Length: 508
Image (cartoon, rainbow, N blue to C red; front, side):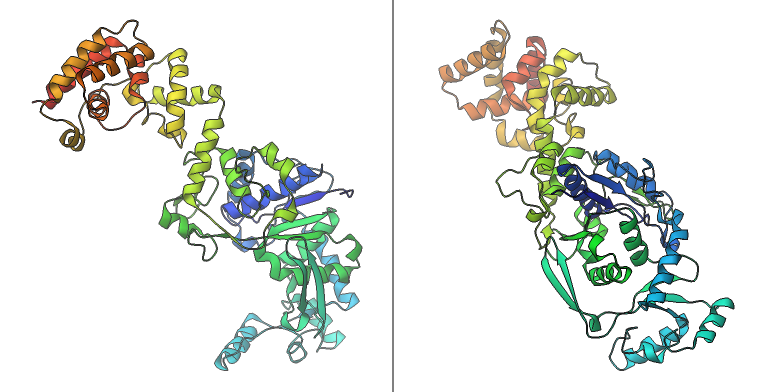
């Protein structure tokens, strides 16, 4: 690929960034890095009525958390700025005027009330009103008004919009890197609004103009924009920019866990999983929607999970670092059909990436968890525990839940386990086990295992019976890591003390 690769992630600051939007940013980033190109962020804030305070900062922070840092953007600057459309609004009117002069667009003066009445009349007939070639010649626009009337309306401040003029019954041919060759008949399209009398362009005009001015080579965006492709391609052709038109790639939807319909915030609320990268606090209601970061997910796990929603490397490999994703990524391997989101698979990815986490990072997280629970522990002890605890956790915040019994004796004993595992002869068996443990020297994993198993063989006891009762005394429940590792960490005196205390409490 010899051309200068320039891609953009162009979110609107209308609320929190959905993980579908984050995946779009990721695929743009991977494509740019794969081909030595430029990754741009452009804030598309032309619709000021939907602007949400704090949304832009949220988007920036989300990308930073995932390591997807733009080369150009509102914060980074660059040679193609400004990178907020609201700061570029003086650019767009001349392009709208150019389309009118060329005959590809026209002024429309229909009021919202007039259009609403037309919609209602069509609905009464069981039809849908569409502002297109079939009706525009009967409406209030510069195609039906003389030049003086148009000029007078504009000068007098009559509200208007500028609409694109689709010729009827024309076949619009398009190419998509994911979906191949596409074609649409223009008679199925409405004359979209490009520019409003308040001086602001709509998404369609601003998007195409900015992509051209920023020399965007590839537009990689969500499937929801596929219906806009005929208009955008037509705009490039109308401006005479067809030779500069970017290549398009429309990414498949991320589907609900059921596989039916697009994944939504409500699905996350119902299923108890996040659909946003970070916690989002609604500025009006104060409602907090959970994010992957605050729920304990590693950013690299989140990226790995999202990459495989719609992209298939063509191998059995599932675990990737960001660098590996860059090396392997190809747009040709993006699928057409939607990808079902699996919350349990997301947890699996996090577990796997925790196992890949350097022990130094895990030690820091472990130390923080212990400190929060009032436990002082030296680095050597934590280093001993890492290989024991690491395989048992899906999230860093589970460290304490999976390790507290290394630092605190149980204060109670699970009644269900007592009923199932504690028999009439168990106290005597545990007392003999205390004596065997007393004789273990040195008190290492190997000597403890040898002493305990030797007693079990000598007495011809069932291994499961003894080990389950012993676990109950040391942990208070049927859980925890290997008992020989736990006992060696606790030390002989603590093990014996826990056993004697437990026997006494259970037998009360």
